[in-house]
Image (tube, rainbow, N blue to C red; front, side, top):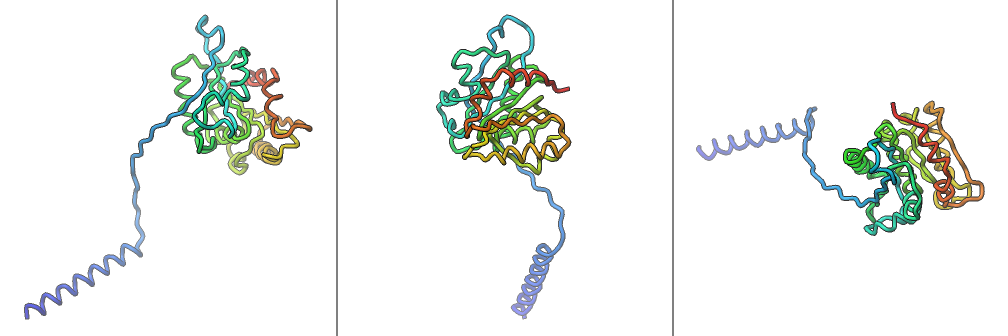
Length: 244
């Protein structure tokens, strides 16, 4: 008799358990997932301070320069291969604070937008940066990174100059309706097709942006950056724009 009662009780418990399990699997529920994630960000960078930096109390405009895929790694000297970082290494003076970070070997600038923002925030907190005149430019992978940054943080920079890059044209239509952008690309680029820049230019214009320039070098291949960065017009163009 006792065994029978126990068996009956176990049967009810199993049935109840199955019913409860079925209810969890098939019912509708509202839940909240929460987890604290801590990570360390380490990024080498080159920092250029203008020659009169220590002789004045004024604030300075800032340029964030993003290199191409070939300069990734942990040898910071590679970053001096192209762009503003190269010109600084050759002795050229700029009226900007220039930040030239190095992308880790297995990383990709467009996936590091948050890290780059934290870097710029850190620099702007340590040095007399005019936060209304912060600019961004990059070549190839850095061109992609430039597009990624201004799409994710459209209020952070006063103007941008992506070179031979590309990005998310769909998001650009919603995020880039106001920022001044000067795009550069070589017509004979066989690494990043000219169409990649064209679709981003079209997207920004579709967003209503009336301040988009597109310079195409008819005879240039992938290297459309040397001429661009050697042209004083680019830096003068940057300084025309201020975040309000």
